[in-house]
Length: 119
Image (cartoon, rainbow, N blue to C red; front, top):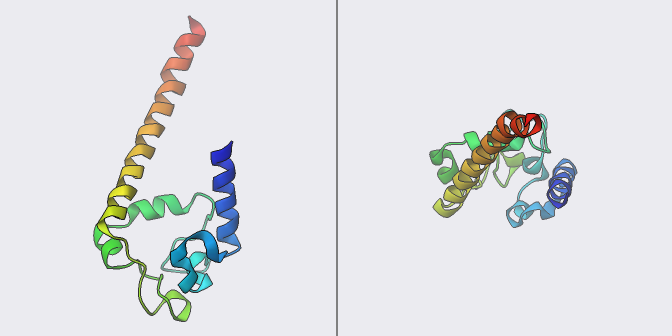
């Protein structure tokens, strides 16, 4: 329940373009936080839609800077938002943990629950 409320609160903060989502967002335009009309950034589903988009970014893009996250002109110009190698490793670890959790959930729901139910 706490995790669901946290994700829901994060989605609401993204939609309302709140500056305190992350310290890095304070120096960036509000369009970088949430812009449904952006052609560069993926902001179609603010609650959970950003997860597949972030997981699809390459190492090179994350190290050099994500396009559309600049500090001037609505995120198009200026210093881009970059991640260091520690953050990239942590991001990839969470991606792996998400895949393992999804696999275990499908395994339990598809195999173990019916097996226990019928025995």
